[in-house]
Length: 221
Length: 412
Image 1 (cartoon, helix red, strand yellow):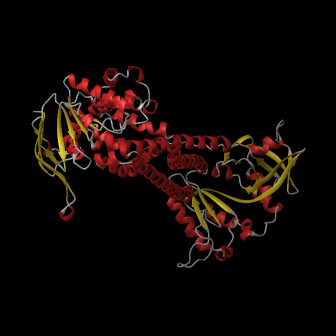
Image 2 (spheres, each protein chain N blue to C red; image 1 turned 45 degrees about the vertical axis):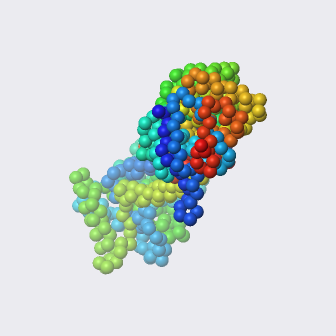
Image 3 (cartoon, one colour; image 1 turned 30 degrees about the vertical axis):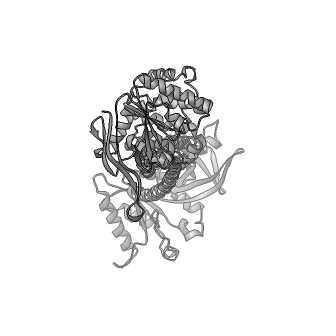
């Protein structure tokens, strides 16, 4: 089992003004699954994604990643885990504007200590994989929205992570481009990659093979 | 992450924010430049002054109405001081530890001409043959004044190289007559050159027998009536300790001036060492001022760096969040921003060193001062600027490192 959570909860603030963003979330995701976490805004899906992505630690409950209890890990170990095991795709792309597409894709490998030559060949392969072979030297502001998100997807796969978390990956794209991006995710899932899609959009969630619905911080049956 | 990657990362700022980086580094540049330039100049001055002091003769004792570099000047007290006389000089020469004594009187002659050529503000002194040895004057051609000249009050003189160059560029000065304030002197010798000191020639001198000097020139009144007094240079016997000679001279002079045991000296005794001490005191002040200027400048520069780094951290909050999401550890982020601050100050330091050396070189060429920045100042300049970068960079960098990745990613 790749991901297993037991009664995962996250609350913000203390005492009277305590906000329970997430309650009793128990779920399991196997290697190779293509899952959508769906829910309206405020349902706690972002909080869940942050927890699954090891960007945050739960208030209570357990999170086992590859049978490893995440709640016991420190900042540095979490960073290493994010670096090697988890890829992120954001709604707002989050590429570094000063760097070329290829350098952006290299970033996770930089922190993994991959030698520079290997980094650049692997980045080229990844960009070819997302169909941007001839765009490698371009800066983000020279790319279209769809192309930018493709670069971000290539970056997410840089260190061959166990899972890729995509947070509203089509949210900032027009519908036609959004469909293309979802097609790309589909084919990456076909190749055996584990992908977790976070979205409020029924149509987007429909691309995944399994949908987990969240309402008010709980999993809806 | 490897250090080389971090350095590359931190150097990126210089490319993207050229003007900002330059202005930020300016404080450091100015600070280091000042230190290097001033240290070089002081070193050059030390070298020149040491040369001058050494040329005085290592164990010559100078007895004058005033000592060199008297602390505070009390003109009432000074005006009451008795003049030193030829009799004082004679008495000193008879002390058991003293070998030779050269008394001298001096005046400044405004202008000396020779067939259309002229020299101005010449230092004319009257002295005895012993001055050659005691005052470290060597004769290049001709002879020094001798005891016969002194005894018979001959109107002869020896002249310095500067006067030869300016008055007699194409002929021998020996045998020619010089007119000093209306009195005529035959040139009998030329002194070996002593060179220039801080751009001023030490060879613009004329030496005549002291007896002739006393006959020809009435003492000039004014300014503490310095000119009435004889200056005595005394050389201790070989093997006699300098301290003993000084003690003997002091005791003798106090007796001659009938000073009570509770009265301070009313004359001055100086040696090479006391002159050196005075000079060291002056340069110590210069060093302290320099260190203060440099410290303030580095402080201001450091605050500038801290300020700009805080701006950079705020500006790049999203970038920091992203880097953390992609696997940068807190240390990775810390190092990235710390190295950026250090690079800023280090490059500033290096530029400062280069400019400081440039200034020293320019001064060396224009003032003929042998300015040299010792290697340690360069290391100190660069090392200090790196230290400033670390000291003022650590706070912004640790702030960046502590950012929460989720909040940082949400930051607009």
